[in-house]
Length: 602
Image (cartoon, rainbow, N blue to C red; front, top):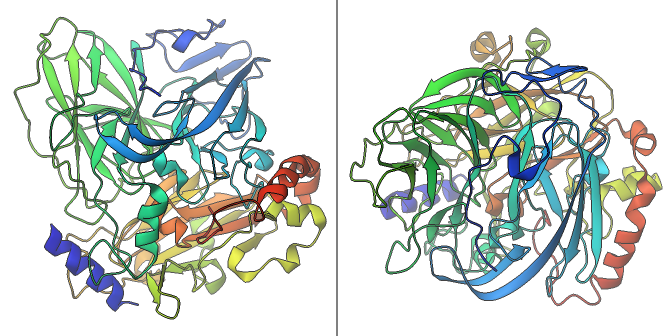
């Protein structure tokens, strides 16, 4: 594996406090009260009958108005030499309410969610983003520091408030210079209908790479050329020290920790909400002798599909149903790593246990078969229940809608970057994009804020992303689901010498684009040495990030922001809400901060 890393990074350069134990959740998920609802174990497709909301409702257009507000207070704290869920010491942890992962945000479809964030970090600002939530007409609540708000200064607080117009599984995380890799993240569960029936909702299962070092120290080595993790290959990332399942695993190199365990009820169908909350790793998830029935990709309900394994890239979520119809016993749930370059861990076989009720409290004895290596590529054959199609016949590639990326090294400043169209993004924490909008001076924004104007409302906009490198990238769009119209097939060995860029060829690739109801989600994979074509409809005014979700890469500038319907932003949201938080930040940074921004800031 080390040899392949040397080949990989050489090729890139040649192209220039406590853990929360998971508990099965009942019909009243985590204590939410019962509603007058038609959603039962024999009819999960229904939600309410009067008014009628169900699996066929287009939540981009309508959603319940419950009149219920769910309120949460998140206190962000900093811990040196913190003992994690594998029994080992992490140099620097940053936690939400003293735990990893942080508390689950639970709500019902149509509820209002209020989150008050208290920043008790010692020397860091922070911002909390709600990954996957559309934030319709509430871009100011998106929690992207330097874009939709100033960061929250130490000792200060800020409240986000928005309606859960979608349902399903999402997650929240810090959006401040890769900070979430220190632990600032947690699940979001919005209860709603399902495209297949189940008996028990087991709740979220987050799978995370885990690093014992502090993120700022690790990122510094990835970002600068002076001390890379593979000598002589700037930009090479570290191996993770472990892979945690809901914050827990054994210590793979010694004593300590324990396997995470979920309990299955024999004869019942269980909904499991899979979330990849990693810094870098993509995983192929599988369970011995148990297929997954996939019912949602990110927050998009789909026609149910049965699979034996599932690739989950960073930021992606899948709702799956596991049928406990096998012999009572204990079964391994495995997170396999690809031979392609989407992460390497010092835990060679990350796993947890699914235990049937009544089984002995022992480790499983059957390892199962290795799943198919997905080569760091997500499947594109899922059919959303609510069909949407973009006018693919009207698309033709153009420089203004093409985003090119590759790893670059600037030896004059000993830095490694992942620029888009030659420019690595860098935001200004003291003057976020919405502040420019508020002041009417968007035209003065620096070029390296990577703003792309999308002025027209209610039109389909197409974006071709091309990757001139051997690294696949999970790309995520804020504020929208994207239609995935096509992508290059994954290469079996992208990291070996001899591979070259496979650009989009409209004459060859155009006829194979998915014109009718393609896979839709908010995060998807950009193949190595290849292309990805996506589309979204401009129905949500705001400044929306579109970025790689590998923390090292977004820190190194792999991002743009779509400034959508600029003229509508001031009338859609109250931009005066920026002022108090930005005044607090301006009083803190840079004059009173011991650390200055040295990356993209997001």
